[in-house]
Length: 187
Image (cartoon, rainbow, N blue to C red; front, side):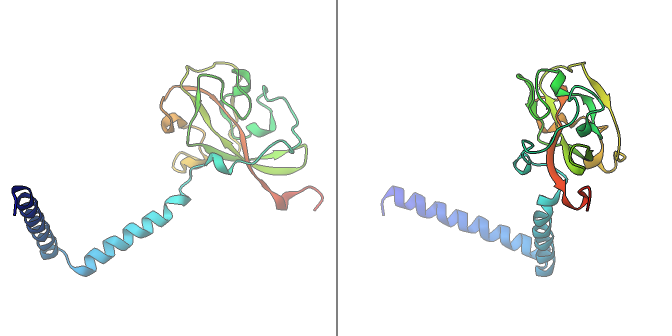
């Protein structure tokens, strides 16, 4: 054998010895039942990960066909029933898009608001726009259905910019995520 083959052979022997030693060390301090229990807990935890209270943009519903009543610059606008902050529509953006220079936070709080235009209740996602200093216009704080901070997915009292690159709050969006079909007027 040449020098290179001997080096590779020695490396594999050393790796085998280290792996064998690590496995023997772990097995002497853990039972199979303990390992299987911890592994099962890990798998169950990974299965529960998708149900965490985080609103995802991919699930957003198009609001083009929804009758929209009211002024998005007013605090009395129907989508703002659980709103807290400055409306992005007053700060250079729209109800659903952040102004230029800011980015949408990846996490949000939610509320259920009644649309007087069609008599339906809609699930609204409130996303903060982050990355610029606070807009300071069209401030609004409505807390219909707000929950204490121990249930953060429905609390509007938290700075929600922790899911973006900057924690500087600018304004808040109100995106429609879904509709309650069983609450249609006249049924």
